[in-house]
Image 1 (tube, chains in turn brown, orange):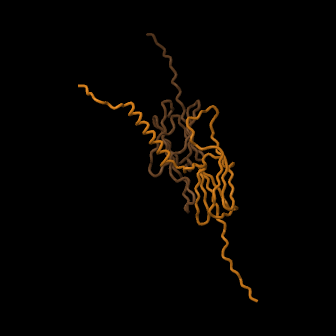
Image 2 (image 1 turned 90 degrees about the horizontal axis):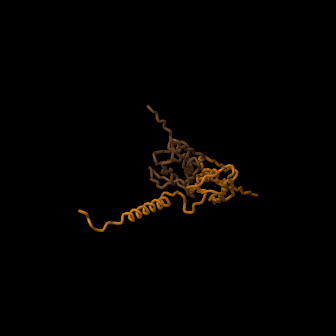
Image 3 (image 1 turned 180 degrees about the horizontal axis):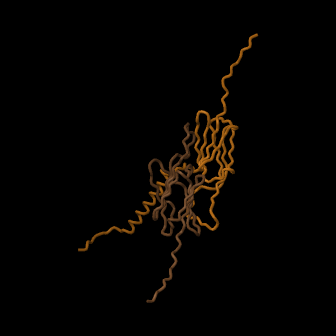
Length: 120
Length: 147
């Protein structure tokens, strides 16, 4: 998996979440900031070589005069490429306190099998 | 019949195209689609004023809220804390974009607030602080004493 290279706009405004990716023995872990997104608002889609994450913000807007606005309401969207080594079936995604964690395990190399030759 | 002529230098063209596409993505990621303000202060903060209160929202995903220091004075609110990155031992970073470390933000308040009545909630990484406005002194009726 490589760091997000592209971000397309979905309907409405979309933002690119900041992401950390680190590598362990088991594979790669992606940690992303999705403030305001709960488990219900999260959609993770896995295809061969592509991981798509969409986060819907579920925080109600404040009805009032704006004095300071440093972040705008909007959903999150980011796409990642997955390498051949990624074990697609083993991908696990969890979200806690607005932080998404996606674990992408590495596929174990297929062991060689010994084939017994039967002699007729 | 073989065509003779000047063929464009394809490998060079392809490299230039790749660089152009990369630059385009870098620019769009850093420009329109980036939601942080230019100063990139952490945490990003919104401040609203309703009829009865000031409401502050801060994006603080993955912050230990018990350790967050929130203090309010007559004219400002201070947010102080730390966001640690949890990276297991032996792991190596491939990409690191999330802001981390100690932070301290002082937000000036445009109205006087009642510090006793301040409420704070934290959900899904968003901190919401409601600061009811201090009751304004109403007009006082002055009785005129007559001798």
